[in-house]
Each structure stands twice: as structure tokens, then as C-alpha cells.
Image (cartoon, rainbow, N blue to C red; front, side, top):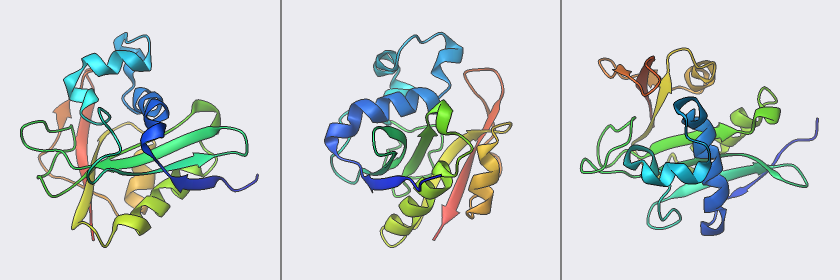
Length: 167
């Protein structure tokens, strides 16, 4: 397999990031029929609305012809926290890969690059993940640890928890 092409995300990538947020949030399971429907959900739109300003940072992974995945971080606040919120100084991470590219190593490549690029900027990064999500193994392998006591019942009725990677 050809290694993925990795590049910095720009404001123009917001539509693709929205599509990746749709994948990452399992929105279809909750009856949302399109990525655009996420914009009406404040608990999810906080990860994408107006992306590309301030401290937003992301990586897009592509083949020669099309984007296949993305990871990004965003500083959220206690007034509008995300599911993996730790504090106002710890950005939350979102990562997703299109279904056909899962299991190819793209997620590892994306996350490894993002961590390398942001480790000197922040004390940590956080995320929220379903306990049964196979990606938990990737997060653990890259140094993320569970945030004890962060377990919540998610929108699907299963359990999610926050994980943190301290630098």
C-alpha cells in the first residue's frame, strides 16, 4: 500500500472535517441523515463551527485522488465543552477515517503526525471514545490514558470516557 499523503488542514477543509465528524460521532446511528445535520447539534457542532481560526490545528490524510481521513484539535471552553473536555487549556481531538480506509494504518499516521506537531504547544490533548471502539487500542499505544471518573452514557446508550495524552 502506498503511504498516505499527510498535509495541514485549512479552513477550506471544513466540509471534509464535518464529514469526518459525522463518522467519528456515529451520527448515522442516531438518525442524523447527513453531516450537515450536525450543525444543529451544539454538542457536536462545537468541534467544527468556524473551524480554522484561533488555535485550531488539523491534519488531512489522502490518497493521490481523495481525502481519506482527518484528525484535528480544538480548544473548547467550560461554557461550550465537548465530550472529552478537561479544561480550557487542553484541546480536544477528533479523528476519523472513511470506512474503506479503516485498518490501513491511516489513523496511526494521522495521529502520530498531529501529536508530533502539537506536543510543544499544549500540556496535553484529550478525546472522548466509546469503550467498545477498537480505536482505544491505538490511543493507548500512543500514550493516552483513561481519565478516571469520566465515564458517561453516550447518545447511543453505551459508555464513553475521556482519555488524555500528557506531554
